[in-house]
Image 1: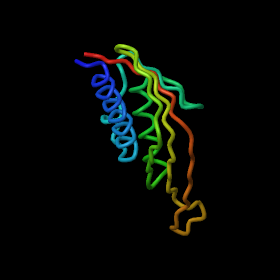
Image 2 (image 1 turned 90 degrees about the horizontal axis):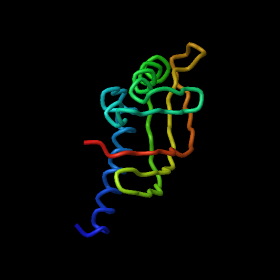
Image 3 (image 1 turned 120 degrees about the vertical axis):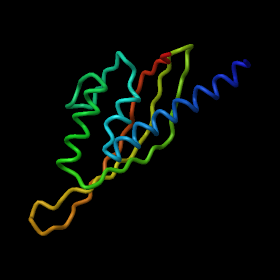
Length: 124
């Protein structure tokens, strides 16, 4: 296969993987989220650092307890592929709706932005 075509396919698969991760996170689907992690994964999300599949479980459990909505918007990605491994930096904005703390039944909106810095490996 033409190496340029393989690179296009690799980039597409990585963008799909990133979108699948966010889709699972936004829908509190820990199985979908966990499926994006390699078998020997590690996730460092600041205060929460652990094996990737375990991260999915704990993140969804916390989200179900503390938020009414999570919604990611992915921006540009810089992807560098080298054989069966790759690196990707992807910008994001996440919007979260929290139940109001004052007992009014209202909601509070929060937003955060940043970038995911990922090391990826092709398995199987």
